[in-house]
Image 1 (cartoon, rainbow, N blue to C red):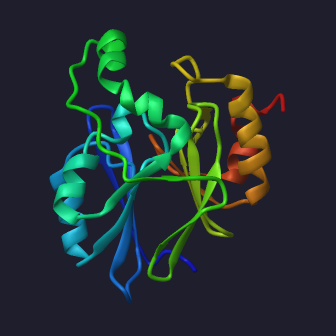
Image 2 (image 1 turned 135 degrees about the horizontal axis):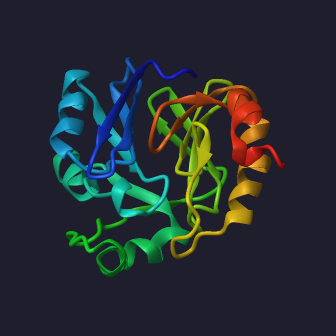
Length: 212
């Protein structure tokens, strides 16, 4: 079923796209990549009178999870991600301090893990979990068939996610795009950073995909 309540918020220190996907009948919602500015996210939920049933990270990099613990406290919802990114989350503070000189709060507590083929439900809104590793080992994309994909940092408008961070793998990322995302058809792509795009546009114009 199509998403009928949809919010895109730009949050946190690296301008992460946080998405809210909700169902107008049940007033249930999923929050994707709460990368900061928890009050902005919570205000959007209140605007639509939504109850959060799941908080999902497309991957465990700090700029996608900074507000997860606070959002859990405000909503009572579970926070989930792919288990292959658990180590990245566990060592988030020391790695970010070493790489960027940024001091972070402790990582959010994970309440459960998602895996390829899972379905996340919020009323009649359903998101299919597609494992798309490469940017990180546990990167996932969330798909509404024939409508859209939340691609995290795997695929951007005109670019792809960096793969030079711990756990990154450029060849694996390109396989994820070619084998898991391109076959979805010409649907809308809502990435973890930057503007939306479409699968068709990226097939034609994304310079990283032209050799594949």
